Amino acid sequence: MKAISIGLLGLGTVGSGVVQIIESHQDKLMHQVGCSISIKKILVNDMTKERLVAVDKGMLTDNPEDILSNPEIDVVIEVMGGIEETRGYLMEAIKNKKHIVTANKDLMALYGPELLELATENQCDLFYEASVAGGIPILRGLVDGLSSDRITKMMGIVNGTTNFILTKMSKEGRAYDDVLKEAQELGFAEADPTADVGGLDAARKMAILSTLGFSMNIGLNDVEVQGITEISEEDLRYSKKLGYTMKLIGVASRAGDRVEVSVQPALLPEAHPLASVNNEYNAVYVYGEAVGETMFYGPGAGSLPTATAVVSDMVTVIKNMRLGVNGRSAVSPQFRNN
Image (cartoon, rainbow, N blue to C red; front, side):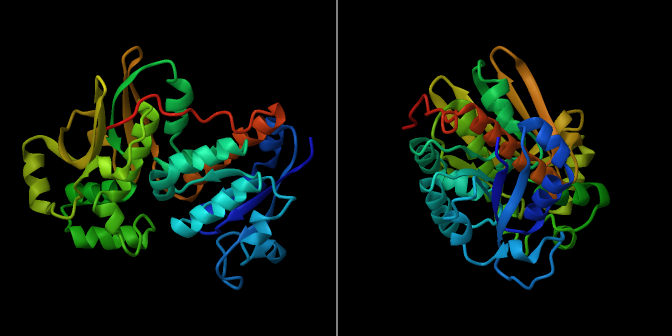
């Protein structure tokens, strides 16, 4: 099989991790897919900026057409973020018969069904494992590992930023603003942390999980959302005295043909497994009628954990290319939500 060429949209934290893994794990990847994999072009905003990883300057471009319309590129990996512009890029890439791997939960929460439909029409793969819970293979677990079961409930911590903040406030008695500043310095929180601390990031992830777990199109507007901005260190101190731990919890439950999805701060007994999930770590409980309870746990953020999920999706795309089954993995929703 010919060598596979990759086009990378974005070279920030996750993009740098993708480059690092593809270059340093080349022998493992070749064993998995039977051919070499190389990054041909990388789209960046600033060609002169210092990078977190060393790359050949000739690979960099500020013209998206060098990737989207490049006949030599087989797979486009999107780790640049954004919504409307990025959606346009991916739609063009799919129409040019390029397979897509993305870590963009904002995009998938808003336009996932539309992009998946377009990918299927063009016999292209579109995978997005890294969009939820970083390095935890939760989406693959739902789609593959639990495909024969009927999921009744999903519950967990799906935002590393808020979990880091609540952990530090609870264990160290520190003020919200102080811990938020530290989270920003460590790269766990954005300069504008509104989506994280307001619960919107977790809500997008729960919408994606619910869509896959319940086989329904669940949108962001279907999720009831409350963030952590109103929580004080006094709240956490009192809950600790009573034997509880405060966490921002996403819950998606199904009863018959009705589904409820929410994100809100919740008090958990200290003996509850989710109560011991600290700092930037994520964990998701999945309840199935046949399997019972399963729990997925791991780092929910960071360059290499998220990049691991991205590259794993890339490997699946290339394996599908060898089998000639690209664009056949997407499953249409079984139910319509009214």
